[in-house]
Image (cartoon, rainbow, N blue to C red; front, side, top):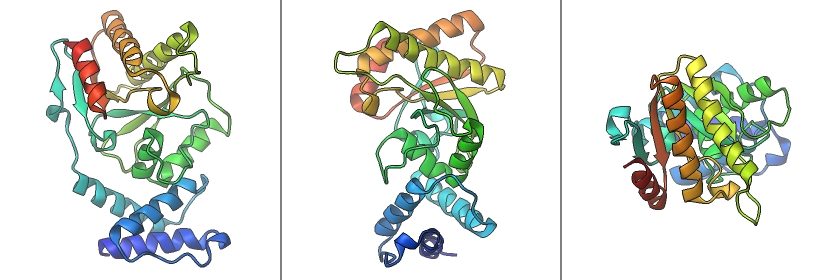
Length: 256
């Protein structure tokens, strides 16, 4: 199948799952087809799909990931403290595990084409990730500060470690918020260590949609990871993945 044929096939399958989609036409351009495909995947509930759909979906997502470019750990920047920084799309990183800043539902973001990392990771992993998350949680809401390990499916990484960070109110982070955010980082590292994971790429947990101030969150992240490494030993390669220039400057300053 060509790229456009795969897009058309996948969109047709997803449209056929819901009669309310009747009348939606498949767009003519790649950009519009990708946006529709991603939207349909984002809103789809966790449920199985046929083997042909999964085969085509996997081939398509891996093709598009290769086009974006896979980034190895050697391409990230090592800091004086032994940690690494990389600025860019975390779904391109070939780490042993990438961290997903999940919501409490733990099955991904259902807002079509939303810009959050939860949406990005579930989109590029494929529909299998949502199904795996739903099976692990059994429909329960997950409290902040814990970690859950899954496969990464079509991501370049081997695993995803999901954690729910604190949502910050108008008054800014409280002492409890700081403890919960620190618990996220520590729980991820404990999960990685227990699972024999060799490298972890952290996103900026709770910043963005959850409104934790960037610098304050970075201070908690770096201090918690440093404390863990001092206590447990540095058997895990740590990458602090940032997306915004402002976050990169903050982490460069803290890790100098």
